[in-house]
Image (cartoon, rainbow, N blue to C red; front, side, top):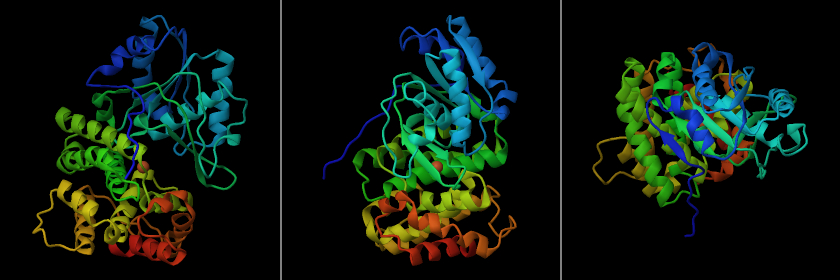
Length: 385
Ligand SMILES: [Fe+2]
């Protein structure tokens, strides 16, 4: 089997790293103007101010865009891109969760290529050879977007989530930034990271390098997510979760997520629930579904989760055990079911369309038919209460 492994860009990791952002950006070349992209929540937490202070200390002038919203739209990217162009940005800095980092990546396209950005964000993603450095500073420990080159952008007309690949230059991962997350965000982003890791081990292009990183990430998440949720200022648990999310990001950036993330996008399009929540709903059923085709890989996931195994389990049994383990963790993290969140079975079944038609499902080792996607959507609703 031939496979590709890579790390997208250098990553600086450690508590307090954000206060050295200016030094790290200066190492990328002669950068005089940086354009920072974030949302109002991160702004209220004072994180961009620390980033700007460090950049200005290094002699870099900054302009800021604080209008990112969850599941950023092409309109947001065009608006931020116009401001960055007018400013003459020589670097784009994305500060926040996946939405802000993805928006920053997409903004970088408009520094080199004429807009609007919808020309480049497509259902089947293409790679744009972007020239302006992109620096990513995650403030959650979940999306791993700092470690991937993909930007997921919502199409306002269709509600679909399409994507594009860009060049990224540097990630600065400071676990202290995640300490301000509310408990539910800690749970959802951590379960998103778990989904990246477990789905990319069980996809149809999984290989030894992404498995190494993803299984290490799964182990860290199973050991530390509950502590990070229960004790938000526990530096050790936050550090382990930040590392895990980053490694899971590298791992799925090398390969792909599959029907779990496809169904999660279906929930996002129809219910507008948070991405990490949707991933949590979809991961157990995705693992059950994929397991028969990837017996060795599902065993790796089960072992990384710390499940006691006899060694004689079938792939189907391992899939069921992994699903049960994720549901148990979700209960401990007080993640409400779809029903308890007020959604009807019919509403949830609408997620099947994206589960079936998303390009992500082509990476599932068991083909995803329309009927299968409907069964999986129903199981998301019925099996976790
Ligand atoms: Fe995700």
